[in-house]
Length: 129
Image (cartoon, rainbow, N blue to C red; front, side, top):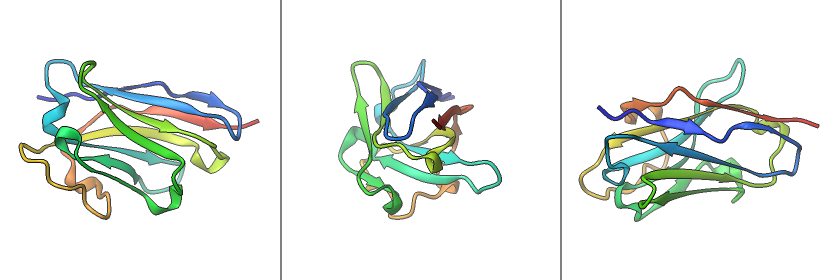
């Protein structure tokens, strides 16, 4: 049973950067499609970024305008989310989610939470001065 574990959240000023990491002990993340989601207080959980199994393709929420980057580190068995030019509206709990994908299918155009079976507990990101 895959159990994602997020780390790297915290408090950052507007315009700053953070790097989140998703690890999964006991399983090889490379065989899973992995996505990051976020949930702001009082809002629905939304897909932020997705990477296909074996790292072939990525997809991002259109609203991010190139500020976020998802990537794999196979040596560390992690998937990271690099977030630049952070804004107060990026505040929320960020979740790593995964689904078994033995073939490198492309991430869906809309990163839907129903597609993913395994979820971490989340890490808080707060963007505030």
